[in-house]
Length: 380
Image (cartoon, rainbow, N blue to C red; front, side, top):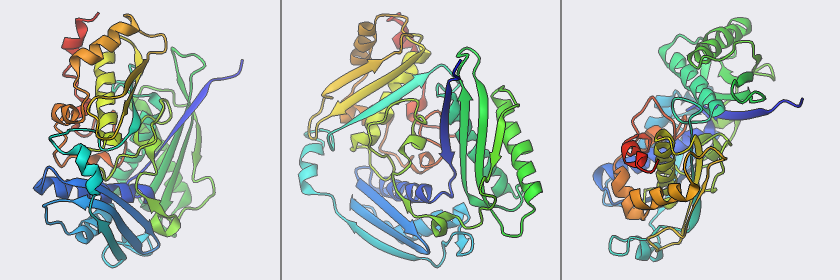
């Protein structure tokens, strides 16, 4: 029988795209900290010894964009050209403008409409404790754990740029197994290759896999090209918003195409996706189904969503119409309602910019709360 294999990937804080996401969200947080009604759409681009900060920002906050960017780079560990980029001395170009007044017409408090048209998805399943798919959960955990070990000094020779990839065998859907784990981790040029790879396999991989109670006889791939010294922005360009599948469900659910980082919550690409996850997680936790994907769609300047769609993959415990009724009755899906429900005008976003926006057990995020479970149980 043909085996059923599914794969998800993650990347670390030192990946070039994730550098840009973190800087964009650090700038958003700085604006919201002083002016909760800031309108921010901040994008970054980085390559060898260069960072460009662009986009549209309208705010009363006094923000030193360049210093924020340098702080993020140095906190990650990018403090020299040799490692990937010098956060202290690299060139930074600021080409930020202000938000279009046309957009403001439909998103001010009086109108309260969406900041753009778009579709967004939320997903949850009872496959893991965090109501997330197993492959992306393990993939995130691997690079987060490896990064923690690097910062502590325990992981010798490791540099900031890392990637993971986890393949899960779902042939027996009741007893999934890990088929393959791949990790590519940047390292010093004078490293001990055997000791480095042994540590990755026997400490990082094994520790994480044991936390999930999974099999340990998986195939292992570590730095398949044999060497990974040149990394970070020196090894590859980075862009804000280019890791949208890493940020969400690892490909287990559909994606509307809109990125998250650097956008204030009036942008429904971000806030709508957070609300869809919040609803999905609480619906599954309440027992209405074992797995659900929720799609929302919006029109610019319009309050109510233009559509709400659900897919329960045959796992529903009540009629799908009942689940839709619960969504409409229990949740305010207007942009302002989403902001109020999840208290999104706070500087909480930089911590979402790496290791995923959903299923996080290491940070407190409002859309991960299970505070609607009891109210949803009445629909059973």
